[in-house]
Length: 327
Image (cartoon, rainbow, N blue to C red; front, top):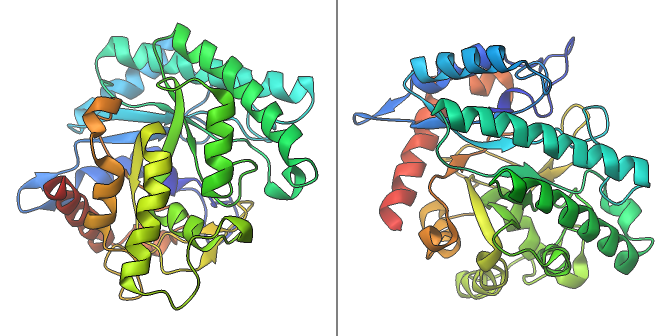
């Protein structure tokens, strides 16, 4: 559901799209008799009040189930301006971050008890940018890891798992190597892991915000690409607990208050750099052994016009079906 919120701002030409309408767009999509099974949820306004009452949350769950949809992964409101704050900030900031995780876990518990949610993780990141991290890489990675450890203990108490989404715009996870260092420092495999997104991890290969971690140079051959892709996925796949199908054209993009990150372009974009099904198979090898029971698509910062086009949804569903066949 976060394509309706991420990078959207009221009063602009890309205002938020309501949860109700996003559910309508999801439920209306069909490809050769196949439909979407469910939705991942963004736990912040205007979709979901992180302090929503039990009764209102159960009513929302009934609504989602009424569309024939389930609920999968949940995005904790860990950023400044929502509930949370920087995972590598002050003690007060870290406390806000942990509060956001606690609120997400409470919502997860109610959705699980309702029965609408049977799989998924709680998605987090460091809630701060690499420009702040680079001043003290080792020290800041240690702070993030310590916050993630505390968050992992909260999640485990609810029977939940956390997945940090690797994006070039997040401190300590802005390159494949920094992400791996952060996960290893957190040292909670199976509890705190990685959420792989095809669009974001493509830019990991090129070292966009971390040239020292680049595995490819522009003008690479197909053979060089898959060799580099194997290095990256061999490192991060054991930590991968959640997965986003997406496409990337090799550029970055940001709208609203969201910093530039790997561009999500249409699944059938002629400029797309990825063979979606083949690339996904590298991440999803032995997925069941890591407890991955569903995959999601991410269209963050798609224009509202693009999201209102039924073909957008059909093409991504086609891509997801191709991923399912490939694994």
